[in-house]
Image 1 (cartoon, rainbow, N blue to C red):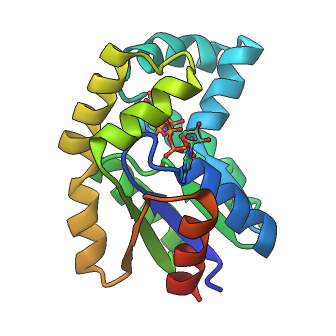
Image 2 (cartoon, rainbow, N blue to C red; image 1 turned 90 degrees about the horizontal axis):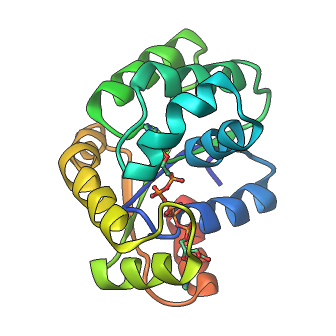
Length: 182
Ligand code: AP5
């Protein structure tokens, strides 16, 4: 199993769910920028205060702010890692590339979870997180299409993109992911 991974896909695709399973099975560090930002919000830190209103609008938090969260953890990491929800645009992808070159830890595979919008919307509406209401979900999908989806072509060109169908049960999706990452 590859041990320096990046999970890509629209909101609600199952990145977090599948990243948790893969990280537990393979002792990888799970770095979800969404989770880390929500922890900052819950702790009421300055960073959290800055991020909260942006997240609740479904927009992207500033690149350097997010990079600062990831950089410290990646630089200290001895084991493999899985990035979930980062990078989110080409500028973050370039910042990440520079960071990984500095610490000599290139990405081994980028996994894209592909899934229909209607399934995503239903999944998020039944979860009901702060940013899971119809208008914010619409905005998150728009941001994904405009800013994040160009990363598909970026990583495809680098020859490290693997695509997996994200429909079906958690177990079925997990088996498909294991197959392409082995
Ligand atoms: P983030 O937390 O990354 O949210 P997201 O990308 O919108 O992704 P989600 O967590 O909604 O979905 P997921 O694909 O992880 O799916 P999950 O496994 O949870 O980001 C939130 C916000 O933070 C952003 O909008 C932005 O403001 C900010 N942010 C984060 N990173 C940033 C960055 N790098 N730069 C700038 N800003 C950033 O599953 C969804 C639901 O479906 C769950 O309830 C789950 O139980 C269920 N489910 C999963 N798989 C299945 C299945 N196979 N069948 C049925 N249900 C399933």
